[in-house]
Image 1: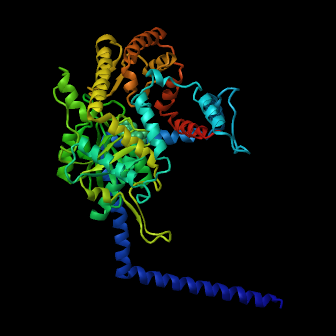
Image 2: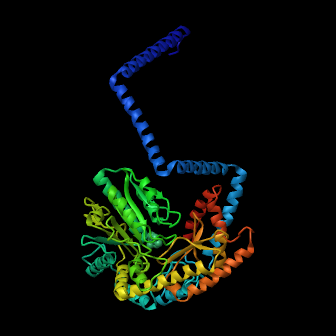
Length: 571
Ligand SMILES: *Cc1c(COP(=O)(O)O)cnc(C)c1O
């Protein structure tokens, strides 16, 4: 049916009338509702909630970071955002991405170009090869050019306990290759060894009778477990839903990983500028009702400094917060420090600070059996003062259609062979063996520390390291250029930042004369860097940390790091 002109007029008018009426009713309804007390109450409550949320969060940040810290945070944030925006300018973007891809190509070539003699296997061989052929190829591959760890020229990295231990471990592996701790009924021997390893480490750290623990795949997993346990305990006991952990800036990055994985906020405490231990005032300032854990290291990775655990313990007890001590690196060296220094006193060291369960506030300790315990890689232990802490790291799925499932740590199936290797090592080395190795490792670190202090005035030792790590920096030289000079002589020390420094984690391999060689190389390299004067340092370390250290280019380091991880899986 077609509408004639009059009908159309009527149609438009009646529609408009309807809409006017509808609008009027909506307005009447809104007036009615907003006049009602309930609505006003809800509106006011929402307003106060949002205001409370904003004010309390801002206040917490302000208390935690202080006025100067907060202003600095804001500046860093704005600067980074500004440079991120700058990257959107096409000319700048293309220049940066050219430089990035050339850096990436160089990195890829260095890591994956193994020369023409190496065959790449990108798919399964059509027919299985004989054991002999496989082993021959693996023997060839072990000869690929690599950093000279065998001569002790690498910081940390290889914590092996000697040829004899390696043979023992290989045999232990062979005996338990198929074992899996997930099935204690099938492998009762491995369950026994596992429990005994934990018990031995508990004793080493003076745990009380109530002490318990778990073995894990490495230090990072031990840290993940203690953070998870703290988060869950605070949630279950106090209803904390926005958990926070306080740890010094020198705490291992495993804590950042735990925070990332488990949705925890990690608040970094400052260091005392003289001792490089955690600044207790800074810790106290960061505490609030969401704090679920405080942590310190014995010693920390960057500087090898043992934090003031006694001081942290007082705070932890006062505020009833669990306290974790990261002794992953200290492992089987720090428990012997008192004996080592008693046998060979150092006039500069009056007292070895306590860090284990004898300190009353300490509730958990992580210790890497695969570092100075000399166990095969993939082995660490997390210890707790009592089972209430451990219980909170457990995972249960009791209604799973696959059956009642319960697992103590991250992994499901666990390599029993590794545990057998760890147990065999600890039984073989024993208390006297670990004491002897601690003694020689500490003596080596002390020689390096004293040589730097007395013979190389251009660089200075950071703090007063007592254990196996010595870190050093310089006010006169570009420390990263020094790293590159050392690297050209085959030495691979760890580069540190904030502040720029280098460190060596001494191992058994460093003790075998490599320390004297290092001291000599350090002197030569200092001379080389000095001779180069103010010219811009061109080495890889200097370039990378130059990029990382500048606000304008910091964002690029993320891309380089992602590129690095991608290259790991270029077959
Ligand atoms: C090595 C280390 C860890 C753990 O590292 P993993 O590589 O996961 O074993 C944790 N804390 C410190 C201080 C360390 O040196």
